[in-house]
Length: 302
Ligand SMILES: Cc1cc2nc3c(=O)[nH]c(=O)nc-3n(C[C@H](O)[C@H](O)[C@H](O)COP(=O)(O)OP(=O)(O)OC[C@H]3O[C@@H](n4cnc5c(N)ncnc54)[C@H](O)[C@@H]3O)c2cc1C
Image (cartoon, rainbow, N blue to C red):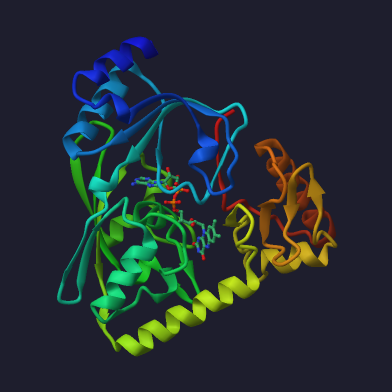
């Protein structure tokens, strides 16, 4: 099945953009994960449309990868096709207070572009290490800001290869969730509306947030940021700390001593180490405080 699939692809994709058995540890911020059966870098909407149609015909599973900063891939890898949008999808255009950017644009770059154009509203996003597409899927946020505050519309592709436009209300943006968690649409472009601001103030806010991240987060280790969602009325990190789990280890994975909300890859962790540690932590917090911790990190693979 895959041999035939790969042959079909070579008729319209460059060979370098088609990889077999690509280690996912190279593409995730946790730096763990076994091989993806096929890894495709897609460089145009037309190519994406063709790929999706073939995937449908051959009934193959696929997964859209952003910057891999909220992803935990099994040590056994992913028996399917990874679809990765190349830099051709990373353009950023600004008109007055409106920004249109490709799904593959890094959030940090979009935020810096807003700064250059003296637009306020994306300061919170400057230090989030994801792509804009992944950011919209997760409704990424920090320091009181989240993408739902600025996103007005999304252009996406459905599994049949048709381009669709989702207006703000269709996006169902909520706490670390959106319609894309339930519908297999691929985000192509994101439309945002910001406010005119003052460059000095925008820059000062970004610096303040960056400083706070460096001080409070274990950025020196691979991680996927906050491992669990914030349970209503609580903070996951505080619950984990109060449960006595600061520094708790399974193999090479550890509850960060600096910020208990982060699970880090301290020393050559496997995905199994990280997953087991997350399960242990959730179980202990449930036992001690009766609170369910739901992973924010997305699991991929067996
Ligand atoms: C050090 C660190 C700090 C972090 N801080 C924050 C923070 O402050 N706030 C926060 O919210 N998050 C934070 N995160 C988590 C992460 O950066 C965000 O969730 C980010 O939005 C994920 O984007 P990504 O491109 O890496 O997505 P990925 O991890 O690649 O994917 C996430 C989901 O989005 C889907 N996806 C990606 N691109 C597309 C697309 N074009 N179309 C359809 N689906 C797509 C994937 O299939 C997957 O379901 C942090 C992570 C790290 C490592």
